[in-house]
Image (cartoon, rainbow, N blue to C red):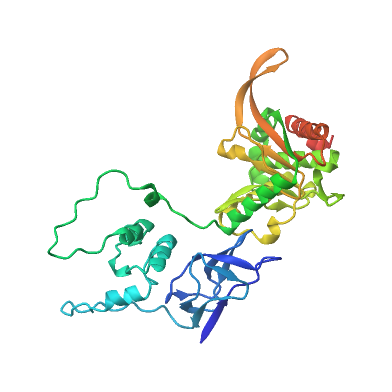
Length: 405
């Protein structure tokens, strides 16, 4: 019995996705609930599991195709096993003459090739049997398809061979590849442009001496790890410091809604982490009620699941303020863009030993540059500077976080 594999509900207001990857091929055996296909939306990637055990009977959409909720991605022959490979023909039997023609007529559906190469083959009706793949495992690449497309028709036998192609680099057009922007990257681009065009973004900077936090981590790291099962990092300090600053300057935790200002008396902090397809911002809910260990566990879990495309849509929605750490990539200084409709974002950067003046003496200290980008429509420069100073004070004297002063 054939069981349909359908596009599941994708989340609030999301109706379409793009087929990112098939984990199985036609005829291969699958187990019930085994992830079969990855769908990419403008927010997250979703694994669609097999509704039953069996073998893949049909595949209706290829990688890169757009699908909508309820579309049938393919079918599974329930209870069937994997298709057995065809037995090799006897050595004395000649290969069927119609095989190349059949492969060409099928449009190369069963031939391994990149999406770009497949598009060139289909649009130009190339003979797949004449293509020789130069990619990994014999996969046909864009260059292979273009080579077949640009190859002149075979000359008659009596004509002299064509002169060799001139040496030198290939035309630039042959060294370009055009691919579709992923839904996630397209959505990021839209939101960045939206932020720049709808908000009056300004950035203020400060520097913070990380010595006290680094000494505190060094002193208590082993006991913290033994008790809580997670290392004490920097992010929990900055989340707690940001919460204290947001309490002191509530307009940074607000948003503009038409002619109204919505002040939020809860602290859902977005933390930018790297996913497999780009930067995503999962949200730590009610960060003011969580301990340092809870914050470290939550951020660590988000980072792991982001790399494995396991974050849910609900975990990426909302947020009243965002923290991004370009320092893990070596960034010295940047001007982060706010995440609409939020009005502020804190940028952390790398820690570098720098010469600074302390009590009339030049000393070497571990310094991090901080950046606060904010919506100047709601937040004045004075409040922005004081907000960043409040974070600086909490980091340079972590006892403030304990005493809430």
